[in-house]
Image (cartoon, rainbow, N blue to C red; front, top):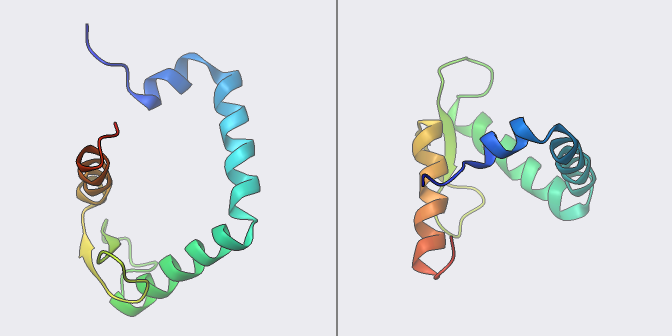
Length: 90
């Protein structure tokens, strides 16, 4: 049996998806959430990818809030999965 993706789960359970969005909105209003957004926005501006529709993400170097590189969004998401697997999660 294939493992169900998170996206598929939320498509099948719209009530759960709404709860998740509500929680995520609340989290992004906390100081930590605001800091994450500020750092991501700063790096996007610094790398010149903000608003130019090039399809690239600004990916932070490990442990850095100010340095990074341009990367495809799919690669950027996969990098977090690798970290999880190393730590015994996922």
